[in-house]
Image (cartoon, rainbow, N blue to C red; front, side):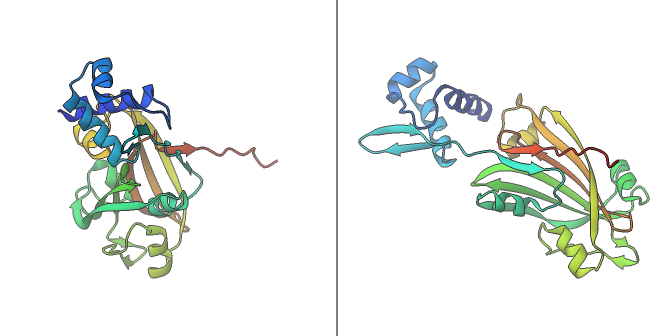
Length: 236
């Protein structure tokens, strides 16, 4: 069964059956959905692994309570791990080791470094309760305010790294958001259908002296991670 077909069937099951409802017998449900029993079983197994279906032997199969969305306020400058943990989720991170790459046009502009000069880069995929939620690329300069940057082994709390280990506290960030249709790689990593919209953010994080410390590109599932905006009236 192709992943896109399974994703479509999983989505249909989630839309058709509310939490705590009992599913019909497999042969009945497969007929209603117009799929084979093997196809249905694969979709149900994916839901079971994700904690969205519960099998009660001798009783039946039930839709589990859906996880609540994780709320992220853009005014908060916190690590993704801290955010997920604070929401009561079990966070798991699949991380590619930090390495140096040549800066492309976007990275060079954001970090104020020459194009093709070396910058640090890492990729992280975050899971909340074993559901892939956020895919993040981070870029850092190799030198900032005369201090050498080496983020290897730091983890995802970049703010603590700059403040505690480098003595360069971070101040604020600018972020831009855009909904988009995922490419094949993003669709695979975040386990979403290729026609499902995801949200991508471009975030530039600054030090208290106004220098760029981090340029991050994150793609997340809006069905799991919900962004909240805070607006305040101007000071009169």
